[in-house]
Length: 93
Image (cartoon, rainbow, N blue to C red):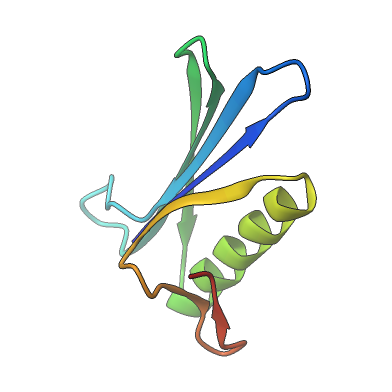
């Protein structure tokens, strides 16, 4: 799963926000990575680990919702018809 969001400020400065679930730890089943940054190419990475898929889905929805409220738009999702939270049936495409 991969979600890429972006926002462009009135002065033209761009910001990006990526959420993906690539497993970073061998023994952690449910992980999430968030990368945020700006056009300078400097990004900050944050990792989350969860006990269940449901907890992970809830965090994905929370992060996505917060960024959308901040004015971020969807640049790219994989898979294309990504459902952010199956229990809430929210489709981001």
